[in-house]
Length: 421
Image (cartoon, rainbow, N blue to C red; front, side, top):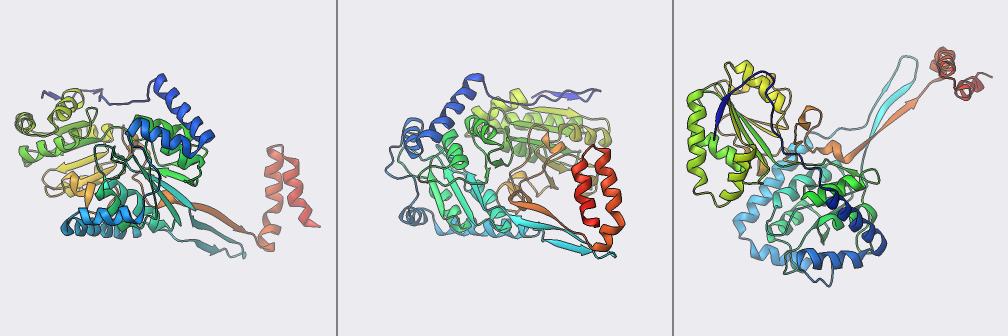
């Protein structure tokens, strides 16, 4: 892995996939068919894409009980504790309705209302992501969403992974369906005989899921269009090359298009990390994926000063940022753009992925410049409350009418003046 000095106008290579025209057409066709044929289309696509011939889409209580029997008690306990940590963190985010009264008697405020329903997409197939279940469901539950629907593609045996089902049950999901891909997104957006439409869809997926979410946005809300995973490590000479390399590879193994970047003030650390990455790749089970990620989207940059290194991090606006320096906490104030910030040696990125409590659904592809992690706010609506008093109306009515006439809206002005009689 090459190292290079930071130069003015450094261009950061990002993995951005908007989908091909063929992929977009496939997604539109799937959505159209689900809207037209409902469950029939879901059964057909599940058999076609997942190799599972189902008699029912909905997961039964028996299947959930079987999942509990499959997992050992320790793993169930770990999932339960992670859920508690995530719920505790998100409880601190919840905002309440507020009102205040002006001196003139007017009452103004904001009403907070949870969404009626939310759909959670959990990736499946050859992998299992119980952490995705918890990270999407717990903030929705904390917000007070009454109906949460989970969808996930089954394996060829027609079942969902045990860990996914146990996590969903611990999180309190009642409606779980064995369907994935663009067809699942369409079902959540428009409804079928089995799956009632929801107000918002969250959760990661492959390119077809991402394109489907983009396609239905406007008819329903979505969380974000997530790209491949990213990690940036900000380090000085105090950092361990072995630990930095391991953390970079923890994201590189996700996807061939994942990005792992080290920005450091130490040339010695840069070279040691490059060697460690090569060494650790040899024994990594997903080495082929991680190798492609490191070769195509990995980088090590050496800065002259920490100020220059921090500037580069802010240009990257990474999904995950680890700070592994002396006085790491002091540097947090200088970070403007990052989805999640992991501070110090013992805050390896997987701590946040699975257990600590903050959400792991994060902005990617530099969108941390203007967006935030999934939170309770994503599952709530805000309504303004305006109750003008007669005193306030008498004092400001003429000004309001004048403002309306400035915009050429006479009926607006007359609506105010009608109350002067």
